[in-house]
Image (tube, rainbow, N blue to C red; front, side, top):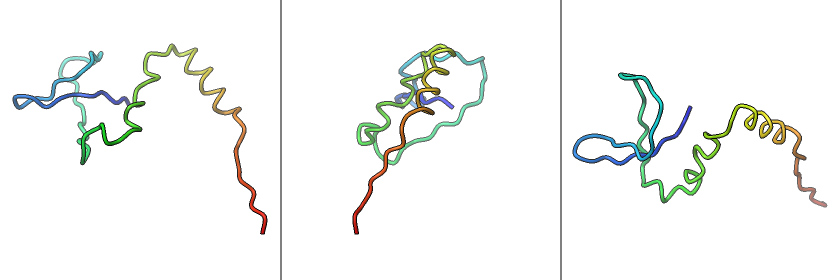
Length: 75
């Protein structure tokens, strides 16, 4: 799944970036309860979309190797 931002204008949703979809491709639009600016995590949506398959694989391998962080609490 990809996230693409758009703007509702004159009865249609206009995408803010080009996408490669075939004509008449059905899509699902999810409209947030509040503007995207109020959801900081949405700023990062799609940031890895332009990586090559090799780069995505390397990124995934790094994530799998990262150390697990935990917190110990003395009782």
